[in-house]
Image (tube, rainbow, N blue to C red):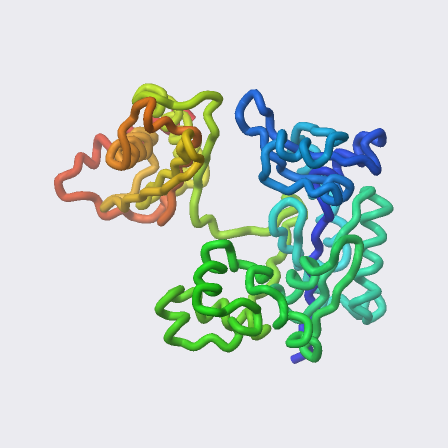
Length: 384
């Protein structure tokens, strides 16, 4: 079997670059895409190269960014434009292979193993051609990682400072990847990084040599998977894209929604209003997808210090009812904290997981009212 040729393509400073392309007056100027300060979502979502050079960072407050860069131009997000540019980019990739797997709006993996012979047999030339086409047709630049698996290809694109192509091969993998901080690898987030560092595992090469006992004890099932990735062992396929949707089909594992309130939530009525709003959105999406959930969770961010927590519970019988999701979410919050001004809430997130199809037979509770549940589901569907 021939070695796979996989690319990870990441559009540089995507949100800010789209803004600069749509408005030529913003080009070559420090630009940040940020939320609305009046709605208390005023943090930096993305920054241009010029803003990054001034020290502006993603997720910091607008006032902090402007202290670093007085000439910073702040523009609101335009998700319709981002979706349009993302779709256009994916359709360019689709001209080289049908295996195009998006990873967010601005990133995609593509597998050109089976189509390389149509484009000159050189992965680097194909990557260069794609890069030039995105620049010419969309006015954006991309970083491209070329490798034999998805994890290493992403590592390559993440390493590139912008508008370049990085090849990570089996022969140079250890020299290139192993000295990098473990946090550079996909799926190694802040919490995992802290666990690794506390045990002295600082680099990807350290993780590659981690023992079974440590990995099983500290990370469970995901531990050995991360070690395999650190060794360059990844056989996961690149999904086939549906050109009509400009996206690949995924198994839905969870449906959730969250919102930062325009003011602090200081009483039960405030919290209940937002919980019901979110629960209605989540439950409607469950029903649209013909799914029920067994696990309901809430995430809370406090107003005082912006710290947060999450709570969840698992039901004996799966549900898609708005009343069930909302009532259980409220119960989880009530059990976790007082609902008063001293414990004001800034952000709430409601999420449902452990999903099952509504077409599958359900084992109902022996003491439950099956007929009532059925009527309530039908009522919710009519309301939808």
